[in-house]
Amino acid sequence: MKRPPISLHVPIGARAIATIAALLLPSAASSQPRQYPLESAAGLRPHNVTVEPATYEGKRAVRVVVSESALRRVEGLPAAQQQFETLVIVEGTDFGDGVIEAEVSGTPASGAGAGARGFVGVAFRVQPDLRTYDAFYLRPTNGRADDQMRRNHSAQYISHPDWPWERLRKETPEKYESYVDLVPGVWTRIRIEVRGDTARLYVHGQAQPTLVVNDVKSGRGARGAIALWIGPGTVGHFRDLRVTPSSR
Image (cartoon, rainbow, N blue to C red; front, side):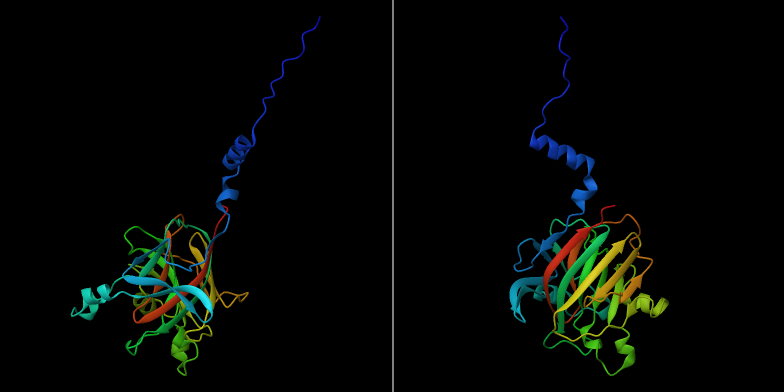
């Protein structure tokens, strides 16, 4: 009598299948978009700013302004020593390449100086020191200014601490900023696409980028947190942040 063949088939449970799939297809899992409604301060870590929930222009959002404690800390110092970062870290983010989308609104704060523009944007690849990062931001009051030079400075790329806007404008005029139609205090949709050392900023859902940067200063392989970003003398509002990491 012949013995029946030995079966090597072992039933695999659903949990085991899911585990194996995750190991075999890590890029698919890591490329899933994540959405942050930004309707409360939960999961947000302010740095030199205050952040609180708000309803702005009929939409739930968070409001970000420079904190009083940060202003007191630099009060009386020479202008050159009054520089400090104003960020809201989105906890749990670790972004290298991919797409960042958000709705933002910026307007000069009450009592802000003549140079206030309502600076508002998003920083990415933020390092633990909270000083090192890349960012795109808008200057809303420049969008419809009568001065064409101001219009040309409506959108900006920076990379702190080594490449602030002043140095970029001085050493490579017009390369890291561009014109886009903006209105202070109005919700504006932005989209940032990052791949290696190339980044593109899209505004208002336009098919063509407002600003293209082919030499992102943090370089290929860099990664870090995502943060909401404002400049001095600004009241910023943020909502509907979406992050889609690259599948690479």
